Length: 134
Image (tube, one colour):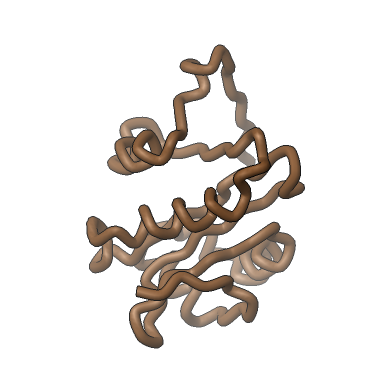
């Protein structure tokens, strides 16, 4: 597996990855997804040969905060270290950033992964979170 910066947006492989991962709210508006990628702070991709196995996308200023927007791994590649490698690679790029934020579904299977790499639930840090989804 090779982790590299994803600098050239390839709509077909991105839509395939998001569809396979079940993130269809993103695939319903491919143009909006492309714009999201273009506005990202960084996107890292995991490849097995020429095949996109997963990606991680962050937004933010890169100095005081990064927000991990997307972390997706193709279902056939899950539980093989792809998500761990992507998240570790992203966190390693921004050691100076104080706040690294990731929001996920309650009961996510990935909670163990997040904790193993030093992330904590907001409540454990005396914080709370709010969200508005339209």
